[in-house]
Image (cartoon, rainbow, N blue to C red; front, side, top):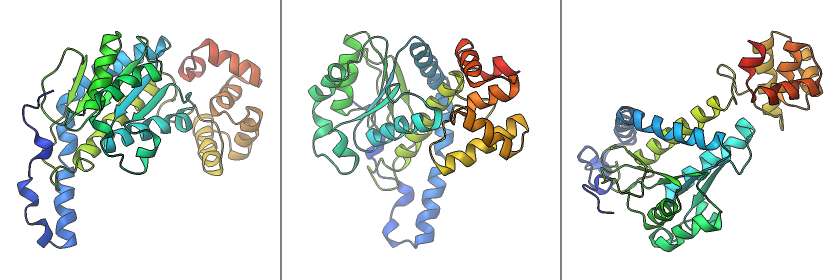
Amino acid sequence: MKNIDNITEQSNSISKKIHTKSIFDIIKIMNNEDAQIALSVKPILPEIEKLILKILAKVKSGGRLFYIGCGTSGRLGVLDASECPPTFSTSPDLIQGIIAGGKSALHRSVEGAEDIEKEGRKVIENNKINSSDVIVGISASGSAPFVLGALKEGSKNDIETALITFNPIEKKRFINHLISIVVGPEIISGSTRLKAGTATKMVLNMITTSLMVKLNKTYENFMVDLKVSNKKLLHRALHILNEITGLDKSKCKHFLNLANGEVKSAIVMIKLECDYNKAVYELKKNEGSLHKIID
């Protein structure tokens, strides 16, 4: 894929002579540049919405979401995917992150991994990705062969595809959704872990958070589909129960224990004055929507 203008590799005039600057001046430059990132994302929100709506439809029909990337892009995809199970009690299979070079590439660079297109193509078969699923490639330059190989193979198998990039590239036939966000040259030329990385995290946050809201994993702005597994989550769960039900925390803890640590079930038990099995039944009947059950 030919880049129209490889902005991610250009030199940033604002950070010229950065090696002569004080620490405060360096971080001020970075802060000023970072402040522009959200403004760069804003014009692309309609395209991001279209992608999320497609992912939502696929997931509701039993499909999965795969992030595929290299280096920083791949690590951010793995990070976003790995945070969904503990935050929203999703299956680890629902949203998955795949990085060129495999798991070892999460900790150290695997040289050349991103340059092998056929390895990207293998991702589709190796992970049994099919037309029920969606694959979102992440490539700051928009040209990583590993990512493009996965998108090409996916398209060939009638899989919905998307590419998140930070260069103004031409949309190819194997890309259904092109999310092209121009954040400008990096503070350190070519170091796309900086502005491009920050913008990537913003977009991935939008994708999974809005997806989880529409999958009834939240109630108002609380992460109610939470299962307690440590002290921090216990405190969070009790706070949520207290806010939604108005019961004091000792009573909330009692119902949480009866609900096997499931915040959603505990809320239903309190609101409907029912037992755990009835709460589970109501949640299943209403597709996990607390809004339908208690409002």
